[in-house]
Length: 174
Image (cartoon, rainbow, N blue to C red; front, side):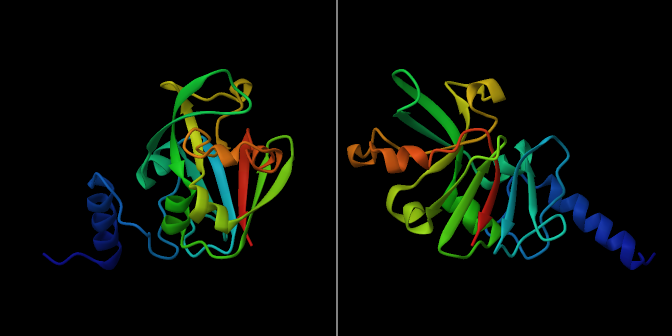
């Protein structure tokens, strides 16, 4: 019995969603739609979207990119913690992001630009958890750009601290 095209597409979607991983990078316009609360919106020069020229990412979609653990201290917290989140480098690859500047905007509209060269040189990440607990707005979450301060003491300066955007809401690749 032959399937019509819409049934074939639906079947392929079902098979793809059952896979435990997603290939990096995603193909243009093929990002799945979020099913949970959107934690991060990514705009600008990106190839892969799931909503009118942007990528809306919930926790499941961020996890699909791949989470890393980074043990570091920050200028804003006491002692060293184990942070879990998404490397900016992996986010860029997954979304097919281009540009030389990343504009990061917080829920309170604080915004800062950081050079894409930071992604290569310093490996910043978007923290989603601290010591096994999901970041909440009151904990500077639900997403927070951090740098691996413990790995490189030269990052301990005001310029880098200013690029650690907590309550991160939007990233724009320029």
